[in-house]
Image (tube, rainbow, N blue to C red; front, side):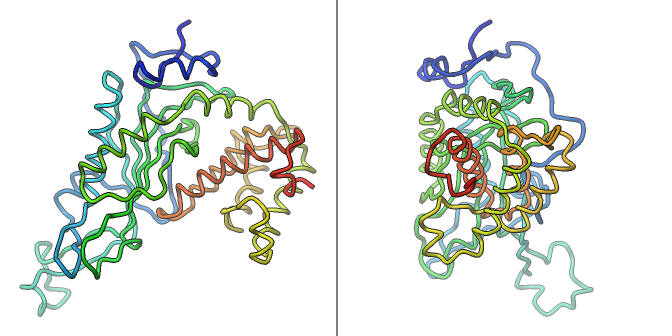
Length: 338
């Protein structure tokens, strides 16, 4: 059996250092599950790239009327970068989710009643947009779950000051693995740029290629595989959840002395419910592997708003890996299990 090559030739040796039982797809590529699953839910709506391109206006910077990089350009640029970097692989079309629609009217329709408005009189764009691009020909099985390589991008206009002159614009971009059982995203530090500032689509394209090249998939697969080797008792699970709830109430000074925990109380509650009821990652005989625990965290994160989704996805990885190390004697995340 050949070892999986996730990156072009330059990255092949990095994967061989860590990965176990990897395979490369040469003919048949598995399709998405028949039941439609989303990588993010919350208050988002699925849209097409054509809709973003043809039906949405592009916001501008108010003082100089310079165009922003709109959502359609963002998606198209990352798609182009993925096709060029992963040449020869299967690159699926982007799954796009949007929220916080901003509506307007053309000048000629300013004096019309709402009931008189035609579709051509209306304008719209979305304040927030997230998308994922799957590469199903690059995958790995972890603890019986298939993980496809996936690229996720996030853009939120509410983080831009559109009332001034044009400045470098803020994007978030990540490459990681998507669990095909539930569409949970596995995000890692070396595969995530949380403050990507660019002034043009050309800079965005180059930044995407740099991120793809620097990502070490072998190391991350190794970390995920190791999560399945450690188990939690029900007592330990309850103790961790209690600490996660307590974290929210701690004074800021005390929080700074503890590794960050970005999940909300509502999401922590979702983790506890999933422990009992989740058919894929719930407890079995009152025990839970850290891989199951990790997927309970990433599953709860799918309720995050677009602009906080990737930060919390990375934090779920940090928490799961950190607690796993704490169970083996490391001090960093010990507070959560003491």
